Image (tube, rainbow, N blue to C red; front, side, top):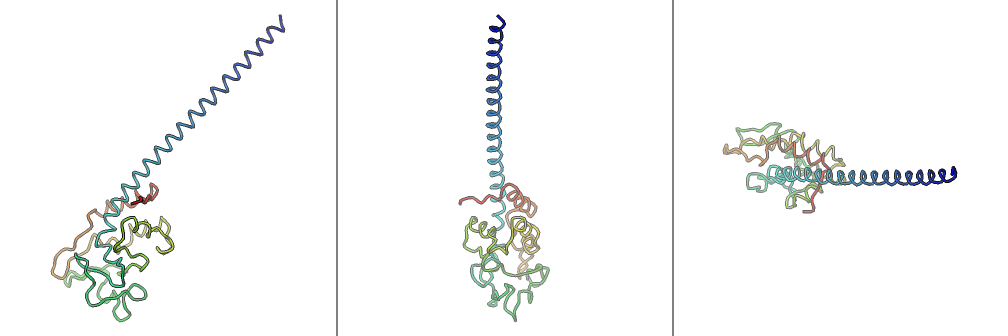
Length: 210
């Protein structure tokens, strides 16, 4: 009798152990699936936020206030129609103009609204490698994120340049032309642009396929 009871007790304990193990595995599997779902949802949300920031950021970076100083050739562009710079101005070896006719000969650290000459610190052309004229917004983004041509900048320093450099931010204080007409500003406010750049970067710096 005792042996029979012991046998049944052993069987019951065995069944309970299997049940607990199955339940534990089932819960663990469910938890893993839930975690995976949440991770996927978060990634989708982050990507959407990054792309939203990208779209707004690129409205600025493709605007004439930026592209005029990112020409495909060795001459800057100017004006609302982005014509080639007057006076045969050239890039020069250091992107600050020819030796006898540097950019800062005319362009000082502030706008000269009397003469209609724009100005900001470090007025110059972007390096040849960072030519944006004629590029799509995706091509622009890829170039500015490529450390081989962007001055070896990582994402943190790209964001810093885009949101803090005085020449970049001049776009929202472009002054007036030689006839006293206000220059066009980018279609996004400076505050919204800076927020968009950071939103793009903080959520993965996603660059769309097109």
